[in-house]
Length: 512
View 1 (cartoon, rainbow, N blue to C red):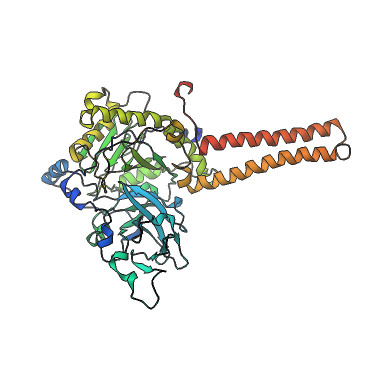
View 2 (view 1 turned 180 degrees about the horizontal axis):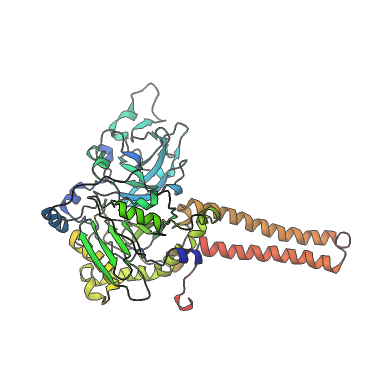
């Protein structure tokens, strides 16, 4: 494991199993709002979607009254009335579309050069339902389906159908030729989207914003981002080898706050995805209606004076038995390290940590499902206060969601079969293919591996040709042979390094 990552970021378990088996949404209001299959085919051209860069923290709001707080504690959670993170912007190539799945909903993110903003569409062309994520951005900056060449602008309106006669009726203007465009926003250098595409929700950003982490945007901090798909559901917990006294407070439909009593560290869960905090002492600032921190002069002054780092995890439900974690580690110490250490190197530690738990949590999720989601407290034994965070999450999930995830599309009430460990813990598709830094590093290392192999062969060939002419002494021959062996050994070591860090490395706890 990356020793630097361990030093800067103590071990944390961002995700534990949550049986994502319920196909029905959590509430009747959520159920009514869930989009029907191919609903976008009947919708008229959509207005310009909400898409912006949120550069400032949300403004403060007046405190809740007692009655409002009580109502907040009791009401059901609406899974579709939330913002969901798609990916760090640094991992999105503006020159290509990117397919993602959230809440069972397949969407495509692409960069609209006409307005310099990211867009999020349904990942299905209205022509034959081919995935738009397999398309391209054409020379006019439009999203083009590569199946038959249909082109769409940033509003989701079809602009060109190659098969339509130039002098014929403008069939591309028909409402059935439009693709659903979801509200989207870039905040904290992460692309978020809102999973309702109806016109009435296009101004959702004025009413509701994604959770805002001020430290990420603070110029005195740096943050390293990462992303990985996981073969199990989502839960929030903190791992530790010793006793941790944690107290849960401020629990309501929007999430909860847990505090470590010894060192005053804290962790906050903002439903449905965001989990952040620090194990170090820190003043917990008051929170606004949208659960965004409101920095006070005192907390801001303390923040500037003492070293800090935070752990931010965004755990996104993808499908039953699947989730995606996006992480960021903001810190105001060791800023110079980011200038000499590449981002892919920082990913080695978190990926090894995720690998260490992956098989355990995949199997554990199925054990929870067999015991029954409602009976989890009877099936386990959680006697210590260090379990308070997972207990708080389970209680929130039961009380406000009726132990069900409000999927955006009809979803089978079944967990996928358990694959072999090499597929379960594979790292290329779950991380490397989604990370521009690791993809670039992998490409460079493969090229270096080939170069080292070629060099070893070339040195041996040189020795054969130059023997008796340029290479005459035993010392010279030994030096040339040593160089060939060194190049070959380096290529073999590099191949092993590539396999373990970019493809698959089995984590055997018995030998750790």
